[in-house]
Amino acid sequence: MSTVTVPPIMTSPRDDAIQLYRAFKDGMALSDLVKRFIKSSFVSVELSNILYVHRLGCDTAAVVHILAHRDSTQRGLIQQEYRAMYSEDLVKRLTSELRGDVERAVLLWIQDPAGRDASLVRKALSGDVIDPKGATEVICSRTPSQIQHFKQVYFAKFGVYLEQDIEFQTFGDHKKLLLAYVSVPRYEGPEVDRAVVEKDAKALYKAGEKRLGTDENTFIRIFSEKSRAHLAAVSTAYHSVYSNSLEKAVKSETSGDFEFALVTILQCAENPGKYFAKCRIKPPRELLQRLHKAMKGLGTDDRTLTRIIVSRAEIDLQYIKQEYRKKYGKTLNDAVHSETSGHFRAFLLALLGPNH
Figure 1 (cartoon, one colour):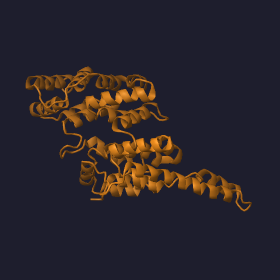
Figure 2 (cartoon, helix red, strand yellow; figure 1 turned 90 degrees about the vertical axis):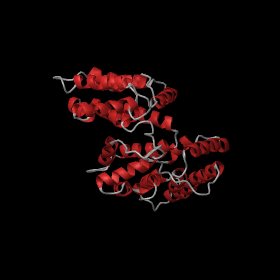
Figure 3 (cartoon, helix red, strand yellow; figure 1 turned 90 degrees about the horizontal axis):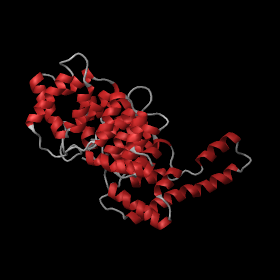
Protein backbone atom coordinates (compact mmCIF):
# COMPACT_ATOMS: atom_id res chain seq x y z
CA MET A 1 0.00 0.00 0.00
CA SER A 2 1.20 3.49 -0.88
CA THR A 3 2.07 6.00 1.84
CA VAL A 4 1.80 9.03 -0.44
CA THR A 5 -0.84 11.47 0.75
CA VAL A 6 -2.40 13.81 -1.80
CA PRO A 7 -4.49 16.87 -0.87
CA PRO A 8 -8.24 16.21 -0.56
CA ILE A 9 -8.84 19.06 -2.98
CA MET A 10 -6.25 18.81 -5.73
CA THR A 11 -4.79 21.80 -7.51
CA SER A 12 -4.36 21.45 -11.24
CA PRO A 13 -0.99 20.44 -12.76
CA ARG A 14 -0.88 23.93 -14.28
CA ASP A 15 -1.22 25.58 -10.86
CA ASP A 16 1.43 23.27 -9.44
CA ALA A 17 3.78 24.21 -12.28
CA ILE A 18 3.18 27.89 -11.54
CA GLN A 19 3.88 27.40 -7.83
CA LEU A 20 7.11 25.56 -8.60
CA TYR A 21 8.21 28.33 -10.94
CA ARG A 22 7.49 30.88 -8.23
CA ALA A 23 9.52 28.82 -5.76
CA PHE A 24 12.48 29.04 -8.14
CA LYS A 25 11.88 32.75 -8.75
CA ASP A 26 11.73 33.48 -5.02
CA GLY A 27 15.23 32.10 -4.76
CA MET A 28 16.37 34.30 -7.65
CA ALA A 29 14.81 37.39 -6.06
CA LEU A 30 16.61 36.59 -2.83
CA SER A 31 19.86 36.17 -4.76
CA ASP A 32 19.66 39.79 -5.98
CA LEU A 33 19.55 40.98 -2.39
CA VAL A 34 22.46 38.70 -1.50
CA LYS A 35 24.52 40.01 -4.41
CA ARG A 36 24.10 43.61 -3.23
CA PHE A 37 24.99 42.54 0.31
CA ILE A 38 28.12 40.73 -0.92
CA LYS A 39 29.32 43.88 -2.67
CA SER A 40 29.24 45.74 0.64
CA SER A 41 32.70 46.54 2.02
CA PHE A 42 31.51 45.35 5.44
CA VAL A 43 31.34 41.71 4.34
CA SER A 44 34.38 39.50 4.91
CA VAL A 45 35.81 37.27 2.16
CA GLU A 46 34.80 34.15 4.08
CA LEU A 47 31.20 35.30 4.50
CA SER A 48 31.08 36.35 0.87
CA ASN A 49 32.03 32.83 -0.19
CA ILE A 50 29.31 31.33 1.99
CA LEU A 51 26.69 33.72 0.63
CA TYR A 52 27.85 33.13 -2.92
CA VAL A 53 27.35 29.39 -2.58
CA HIS A 54 23.78 29.84 -1.30
CA ARG A 55 22.71 32.84 -3.35
CA LEU A 56 20.65 30.85 -5.84
CA GLY A 57 18.81 28.73 -3.31
CA CYS A 58 15.14 28.29 -4.18
CA ASP A 59 12.21 27.92 -1.83
CA THR A 60 13.00 24.24 -1.27
CA ALA A 61 10.28 23.83 1.32
CA ALA A 62 7.66 24.77 -1.28
CA VAL A 63 9.13 22.36 -3.83
CA VAL A 64 9.10 19.53 -1.28
CA HIS A 65 5.54 20.34 -0.19
CA ILE A 66 4.23 20.17 -3.75
CA LEU A 67 6.09 17.20 -5.21
CA ALA A 68 6.02 14.91 -2.17
CA HIS A 69 2.22 15.00 -2.21
CA ARG A 70 1.66 14.16 -5.87
CA ASP A 71 1.39 10.66 -7.33
CA SER A 72 3.23 9.41 -10.40
CA THR A 73 0.56 10.47 -12.88
CA GLN A 74 0.26 13.93 -11.36
CA ARG A 75 4.04 14.43 -11.37
CA GLY A 76 4.14 13.52 -15.05
CA LEU A 77 1.40 16.06 -15.84
CA ILE A 78 3.20 18.75 -13.84
CA GLN A 79 6.33 18.18 -15.91
CA GLN A 80 4.32 18.49 -19.13
CA GLU A 81 2.67 21.73 -17.99
CA TYR A 82 5.96 23.20 -16.79
CA ARG A 83 7.63 22.56 -20.15
CA ALA A 84 4.64 23.94 -22.07
CA MET A 85 4.43 27.11 -19.97
CA TYR A 86 8.10 27.94 -19.47
CA SER A 87 9.87 26.13 -22.36
CA GLU A 88 12.11 24.49 -19.78
CA ASP A 89 12.59 20.96 -18.51
CA LEU A 90 11.52 20.70 -14.88
CA VAL A 91 14.11 18.03 -14.09
CA LYS A 92 16.93 20.26 -15.35
CA ARG A 93 15.59 23.16 -13.33
CA LEU A 94 15.37 21.05 -10.18
CA THR A 95 18.95 19.89 -10.79
CA SER A 96 20.13 23.49 -10.92
CA GLU A 97 18.12 24.60 -7.88
CA LEU A 98 18.51 21.77 -5.37
CA ARG A 99 21.60 20.37 -3.69
CA GLY A 100 22.76 17.31 -1.78
CA ASP A 101 20.53 14.56 -0.47
CA VAL A 102 17.25 16.36 -1.13
CA GLU A 103 18.26 16.89 -4.75
CA ARG A 104 19.00 13.19 -5.18
CA ALA A 105 15.70 12.20 -3.56
CA VAL A 106 13.52 14.65 -5.49
CA LEU A 107 15.14 13.81 -8.84
CA LEU A 108 14.42 10.11 -8.23
CA TRP A 109 10.87 10.84 -7.14
CA ILE A 110 10.01 13.00 -10.15
CA GLN A 111 10.67 10.11 -12.54
CA ASP A 112 8.24 7.38 -13.56
CA PRO A 113 9.01 3.91 -12.07
CA ALA A 114 10.90 2.59 -15.12
CA GLY A 115 12.99 5.73 -15.41
CA ARG A 116 13.72 5.63 -11.69
CA ASP A 117 14.83 1.99 -11.86
CA ALA A 118 17.06 2.76 -14.82
CA SER A 119 18.64 5.70 -12.98
CA LEU A 120 19.16 3.72 -9.79
CA VAL A 121 20.82 0.81 -11.55
CA ARG A 122 22.95 3.05 -13.77
CA LYS A 123 24.16 5.00 -10.74
CA ALA A 124 24.93 1.78 -8.88
CA LEU A 125 26.93 0.36 -11.80
CA SER A 126 28.71 3.47 -13.04
CA GLY A 127 28.87 5.98 -10.20
CA ASP A 128 31.88 7.13 -8.22
CA VAL A 129 31.31 4.20 -5.88
CA ILE A 130 30.13 0.96 -7.50
CA ASP A 131 27.23 -0.51 -5.54
CA PRO A 132 26.49 -4.04 -6.80
CA LYS A 133 24.00 -4.69 -3.99
CA GLY A 134 22.07 -1.56 -4.92
CA ALA A 135 21.79 -2.68 -8.54
CA THR A 136 20.91 -6.23 -7.44
CA GLU A 137 18.19 -5.01 -5.08
CA VAL A 138 16.42 -3.25 -7.95
CA ILE A 139 16.91 -5.91 -10.62
CA CYS A 140 16.03 -8.94 -8.53
CA SER A 141 12.91 -7.42 -6.99
CA ARG A 142 11.29 -6.54 -10.33
CA THR A 143 9.00 -8.66 -12.50
CA PRO A 144 10.13 -9.72 -16.00
CA SER A 145 7.87 -7.13 -17.64
CA GLN A 146 9.19 -4.39 -15.36
CA ILE A 147 12.75 -5.41 -16.18
CA GLN A 148 12.10 -5.34 -19.92
CA HIS A 149 10.54 -1.89 -19.61
CA PHE A 150 13.35 -0.33 -17.64
CA LYS A 151 15.93 -2.00 -19.92
CA GLN A 152 14.44 -0.05 -22.82
CA VAL A 153 14.52 3.17 -20.81
CA TYR A 154 18.08 2.38 -19.70
CA PHE A 155 19.35 2.27 -23.26
CA ALA A 156 17.32 5.31 -24.31
CA LYS A 157 18.65 7.42 -21.41
CA PHE A 158 22.26 6.27 -21.21
CA GLY A 159 23.09 4.89 -24.66
CA VAL A 160 24.36 1.62 -23.26
CA TYR A 161 22.67 -1.74 -22.73
CA LEU A 162 22.05 -2.85 -19.15
CA GLU A 163 23.78 -6.13 -19.90
CA GLN A 164 26.96 -4.26 -20.83
CA ASP A 165 27.14 -2.51 -17.46
CA ILE A 166 26.42 -5.76 -15.64
CA GLU A 167 29.15 -7.49 -17.63
CA PHE A 168 31.68 -4.78 -16.81
CA GLN A 169 30.89 -4.14 -13.14
CA THR A 170 29.95 -7.52 -11.65
CA PHE A 171 31.82 -10.76 -11.33
CA GLY A 172 31.59 -14.54 -11.18
CA ASP A 173 28.36 -16.29 -10.34
CA HIS A 174 26.73 -13.00 -9.37
CA LYS A 175 27.30 -11.71 -12.91
CA LYS A 176 26.02 -14.94 -14.47
CA LEU A 177 22.83 -14.75 -12.41
CA LEU A 178 22.12 -11.09 -13.15
CA LEU A 179 22.74 -11.50 -16.88
CA ALA A 180 20.38 -14.47 -16.97
CA TYR A 181 17.79 -12.73 -14.81
CA VAL A 182 17.52 -9.65 -17.05
CA SER A 183 17.54 -11.71 -20.26
CA VAL A 184 15.43 -14.84 -19.73
CA PRO A 185 11.65 -14.40 -20.19
CA ARG A 186 9.70 -15.82 -17.24
CA TYR A 187 6.05 -16.69 -16.78
CA GLU A 188 4.28 -14.20 -14.49
CA GLY A 189 1.07 -16.13 -13.75
CA PRO A 190 0.09 -18.15 -10.66
CA GLU A 191 -0.02 -21.66 -12.15
CA VAL A 192 2.72 -24.19 -11.34
CA ASP A 193 3.52 -27.75 -12.43
CA ARG A 194 3.84 -29.83 -9.24
CA ALA A 195 5.99 -32.45 -10.90
CA VAL A 196 8.49 -29.81 -12.06
CA VAL A 197 8.36 -28.16 -8.63
CA GLU A 198 9.39 -31.41 -6.93
CA LYS A 199 12.07 -32.00 -9.56
CA ASP A 200 13.58 -28.53 -9.01
CA ALA A 201 13.47 -28.88 -5.22
CA LYS A 202 15.40 -32.15 -5.54
CA ALA A 203 17.85 -30.59 -8.02
CA LEU A 204 18.60 -27.72 -5.64
CA TYR A 205 19.14 -30.13 -2.76
CA LYS A 206 21.56 -32.19 -4.84
CA ALA A 207 23.31 -29.00 -6.01
CA GLY A 208 23.78 -27.75 -2.47
CA GLU A 209 23.26 -29.48 0.83
CA LYS A 210 23.66 -33.05 -0.43
CA ARG A 211 27.09 -32.59 -1.97
CA LEU A 212 30.52 -31.33 -0.99
CA GLY A 213 30.75 -27.93 -2.61
CA THR A 214 27.98 -26.21 -4.55
CA ASP A 215 26.74 -26.55 -8.11
CA GLU A 216 26.12 -22.83 -8.63
CA ASN A 217 24.91 -23.29 -12.21
CA THR A 218 21.88 -25.24 -11.02
CA PHE A 219 20.92 -22.42 -8.67
CA ILE A 220 21.43 -19.88 -11.46
CA ARG A 221 19.34 -21.86 -13.92
CA ILE A 222 16.36 -22.41 -11.62
CA PHE A 223 16.34 -18.97 -10.02
CA SER A 224 16.66 -17.13 -13.34
CA GLU A 225 14.32 -19.24 -15.47
CA LYS A 226 11.40 -20.08 -13.19
CA SER A 227 8.46 -17.88 -12.24
CA ARG A 228 7.88 -16.43 -8.80
CA ALA A 229 4.95 -18.74 -8.21
CA HIS A 230 7.12 -21.71 -9.15
CA LEU A 231 9.99 -20.67 -6.86
CA ALA A 232 7.57 -20.12 -3.97
CA ALA A 233 6.22 -23.66 -4.51
CA VAL A 234 9.78 -25.03 -4.73
CA SER A 235 10.61 -23.33 -1.43
CA THR A 236 7.60 -24.94 0.24
CA ALA A 237 8.39 -28.37 -1.24
CA TYR A 238 12.04 -28.08 -0.21
CA HIS A 239 11.12 -27.41 3.39
CA SER A 240 8.58 -30.20 3.41
CA VAL A 241 10.94 -32.85 2.05
CA TYR A 242 14.29 -31.82 3.54
CA SER A 243 13.20 -30.16 6.83
CA ASN A 244 15.20 -27.04 6.07
CA SER A 245 14.21 -23.79 4.44
CA LEU A 246 15.50 -23.12 0.96
CA GLU A 247 16.63 -19.68 2.08
CA LYS A 248 18.82 -21.18 4.80
CA ALA A 249 20.24 -23.61 2.26
CA VAL A 250 21.06 -20.74 -0.10
CA LYS A 251 22.79 -18.82 2.69
CA SER A 252 24.83 -21.82 3.76
CA GLU A 253 25.87 -22.75 0.22
CA THR A 254 26.60 -19.32 -1.29
CA SER A 255 28.05 -16.00 -0.21
CA GLY A 256 28.51 -12.35 -1.06
CA ASP A 257 26.60 -10.62 -3.83
CA PHE A 258 25.61 -13.96 -5.35
CA GLU A 259 23.91 -14.98 -2.11
CA PHE A 260 22.25 -11.57 -1.83
CA ALA A 261 20.81 -11.88 -5.35
CA LEU A 262 19.45 -15.40 -4.76
CA VAL A 263 17.91 -14.43 -1.42
CA THR A 264 16.31 -11.32 -2.92
CA ILE A 265 14.78 -13.35 -5.76
CA LEU A 266 13.52 -15.99 -3.33
CA GLN A 267 12.03 -13.56 -0.83
CA CYS A 268 10.20 -11.73 -3.61
CA ALA A 269 8.93 -15.07 -4.92
CA GLU A 270 7.61 -16.03 -1.50
CA ASN A 271 5.41 -12.91 -1.71
CA PRO A 272 4.11 -13.83 -5.17
CA GLY A 273 2.07 -12.00 -7.79
CA LYS A 274 0.62 -9.32 -5.55
CA TYR A 275 4.06 -8.50 -4.15
CA PHE A 276 3.75 -4.93 -5.29
CA ALA A 277 1.13 -3.97 -2.76
CA LYS A 278 -2.13 -5.44 -4.05
CA CYS A 279 -2.60 -7.34 -0.81
CA ARG A 280 -1.26 -7.40 2.73
CA ILE A 281 2.06 -9.10 2.55
CA LYS A 282 5.31 -8.86 4.41
CA PRO A 283 8.12 -7.08 2.57
CA PRO A 284 11.32 -9.08 2.04
CA ARG A 285 13.34 -9.38 5.26
CA GLU A 286 16.48 -8.41 3.38
CA LEU A 287 14.88 -5.07 2.50
CA LEU A 288 14.04 -4.33 6.13
CA GLN A 289 17.57 -5.22 7.17
CA ARG A 290 19.13 -2.94 4.54
CA LEU A 291 16.81 -0.12 5.55
CA HIS A 292 17.72 -0.53 9.23
CA LYS A 293 21.43 -0.87 8.46
CA ALA A 294 21.32 2.40 6.47
CA MET A 295 20.49 4.23 9.72
CA LYS A 296 22.56 2.18 12.17
CA GLY A 297 25.91 3.14 13.63
CA LEU A 298 27.95 6.23 12.84
CA GLY A 299 26.61 8.15 9.90
CA THR A 300 23.66 7.39 7.68
CA ASP A 301 23.71 5.64 4.33
CA ASP A 302 21.56 8.31 2.70
CA ARG A 303 21.68 6.71 -0.75
CA THR A 304 20.26 3.39 0.43
CA LEU A 305 17.70 5.16 2.60
CA THR A 306 16.62 7.33 -0.34
CA ARG A 307 16.48 4.44 -2.80
CA ILE A 308 14.25 2.27 -0.63
CA ILE A 309 11.82 4.95 0.56
CA VAL A 310 11.46 6.69 -2.80
CA SER A 311 11.14 3.50 -4.86
CA ARG A 312 8.63 1.86 -2.49
CA ALA A 313 6.49 4.86 -1.48
CA GLU A 314 3.87 4.10 -4.12
CA ILE A 315 4.16 0.32 -3.82
CA ASP A 316 4.22 -1.17 -0.32
CA LEU A 317 5.89 1.31 2.02
CA GLN A 318 2.91 1.17 4.40
CA TYR A 319 3.60 -2.51 5.03
CA ILE A 320 7.33 -1.92 5.26
CA LYS A 321 6.57 0.61 8.00
CA GLN A 322 4.47 -1.96 9.87
CA GLU A 323 7.11 -4.68 9.63
CA TYR A 324 9.90 -2.26 10.55
CA ARG A 325 8.14 -1.38 13.79
CA LYS A 326 7.52 -5.03 14.63
CA LYS A 327 11.15 -5.96 14.00
CA TYR A 328 12.99 -2.98 15.50
CA GLY A 329 10.58 -1.62 18.14
CA LYS A 330 10.38 1.91 16.73
CA THR A 331 8.57 3.53 13.85
CA LEU A 332 10.37 4.10 10.56
CA ASN A 333 9.29 7.74 10.75
CA ASP A 334 11.05 8.16 14.11
CA ALA A 335 14.20 6.46 12.80
CA VAL A 336 14.30 8.70 9.72
CA HIS A 337 13.61 11.79 11.83
CA SER A 338 16.52 11.03 14.16
CA GLU A 339 19.01 10.21 11.39
CA THR A 340 18.30 12.94 8.82
CA SER A 341 17.83 16.70 8.82
CA GLY A 342 16.60 19.70 6.90
CA HIS A 343 14.68 19.52 3.66
CA PHE A 344 15.89 15.96 3.09
CA ARG A 345 14.22 14.87 6.32
CA ALA A 346 11.04 16.78 5.45
CA PHE A 347 10.86 15.14 2.04
CA LEU A 348 11.35 11.58 3.30
CA LEU A 349 8.85 12.07 6.13
CA ALA A 350 6.31 13.43 3.64
CA LEU A 351 6.71 10.26 1.55
CA LEU A 352 6.41 8.09 4.67
CA GLY A 353 3.09 9.64 5.62
CA PRO A 354 1.59 9.75 9.15
CA ASN A 355 3.61 8.26 11.99
CA HIS A 356 1.37 5.33 12.84
